[in-house]
Image 1 (cartoon, helix red, strand yellow):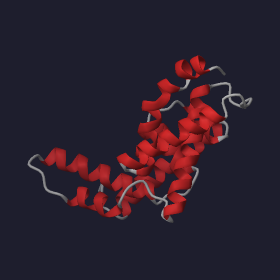
Image 2 (cartoon, rainbow, N blue to C red; image 1 turned 60 degrees about the vertical axis):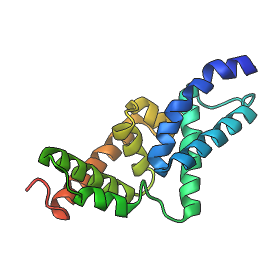
Image 3 (spheres, one colour; image 1 turned 60 degrees about the horizontal axis):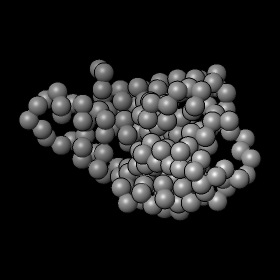
Image 4 (tube, rainbow, N blue to C red; image 1 turned 45 degrees about the vertical axis):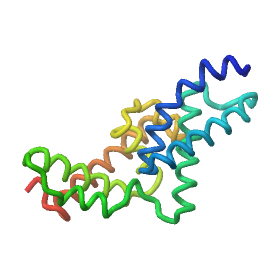
Length: 170
């Protein structure tokens, strides 16, 4: 891949990769550093034949794997600070509806942060980032049917946790 091709094909993925990294790391600085490191890695591997026919999927996989490595180094695989999620869930706002949405979002983030891999990545990519089933399956190295089952079970788990632990939906 020439430098010009890299600029046209890979660099435009930067914003999307930043959003993905931010979802995993919940830190602006770490997400920026991660994307910069990903771009350097993609540049150094630009001439290696990729198993991905889709450059966006390749970029996403590299970003996801780097974020997981960063979280492992922190020795806490989580999306965000549970204290922040709980604070968001119990914080007071002027509008009750806004408060309930904020609370539910904080609780869902907390529940997802406690899920194991690859389920957490599947939920983040599909439900929070809006990737298609095909893109998510390719990135996670699985097939669409298995991904659909994984996401269905994850959603069921989230609903059950919201009802059982937090009393939502009752």
